[in-house]
Image 1 (spheres, rainbow, N blue to C red):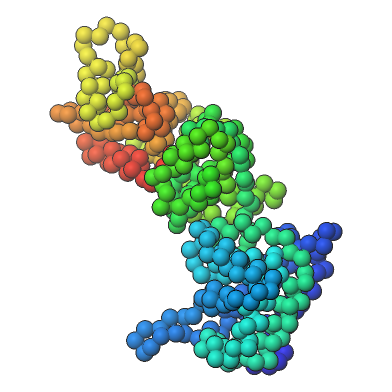
Image 2 (cartoon, rainbow, N blue to C red; image 1 turned 90 degrees about the vertical axis):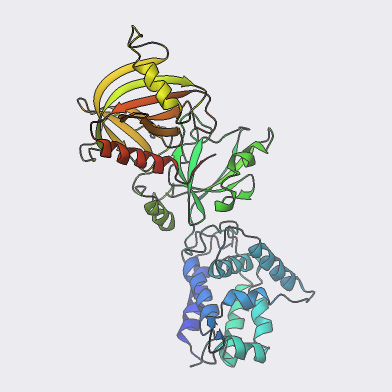
Length: 439
């Protein structure tokens, strides 16, 4: 490899670019236009020319994080202590699941502390490890080029960086950093949101109106709930979300939100957009509690849904299980009732279209196209057909999220098509059994 390696040349030029774009306080911030390019070049040097490890049966590619993690030494100088601390902090980052993400986080930690040269200084003098880990034609595998790289890092250690080292949630995916919102909310028992887990990220899929988070217009559907009272939110804690909030015991609730849309540039963060697409959420729409009720009128371009007759609704009290459907049907259509509308029941008898979306159910009046019912899957506790009368079917909703609701109402429909009834109930059932969790 030539002494004038193009990657090292680009790295030197990138360092000069960083200094030229430095801010008035002599710090390099995350907003520095040359920072990402510089970090990518550092990552390339560490990752280029790694030897495969193993035998003739099984081999695996060595990763830079593996040797950098083990390069912690017992030197008593301040730089070595800072590097050891940086490695420790990265290991504690629960949001990082790949060694690529850990390498990126380590680079950012070390830039802040001016200690990125520490592992390289020891590595270039260890010819045995150098030959095992890197190929000879790589920068870190070459005697001269590794010394040049070390000199660049020593120069970088004299530059003052002030990066947000806590913004690590998406380093597994990209060097680009999303906007992060840190909130301190009033003590509460519930945040009033629903999240769905995809690739270990908790995407907000619903914001309940009048909830504590709905009052903050900066939080919208598509944002990621990253941490709650200091606990990183991933699939392993999805059954403990409410207990995490309740454990604050009258103390403010600390919430960390990763934004899908940058509030200054209005740009969408592409890794979160990809997650939204997996949940079939429209990445072009981000909305908060003031918008989650919909426009009230059916879009002309939307699908027609399932045609049925909306018979009416019946209040069923504190129980919201499927056994209440037969009771509600008898209550609604009892011949001994003189009034079609009273405190416990309401007979409607309208032809409707029922649409099953990703987040809930909408029922449109066929004549006016107005939305007459709209419920999220978090509010639906059960669905099914009436015993011995399978043409009548229903779903039950609570006065809030079904796991905390105390009053339930059963909405009853009729269709001549038994197969359509079965398909519709399956769709509703799959919807409220999805991995949506109330917080």
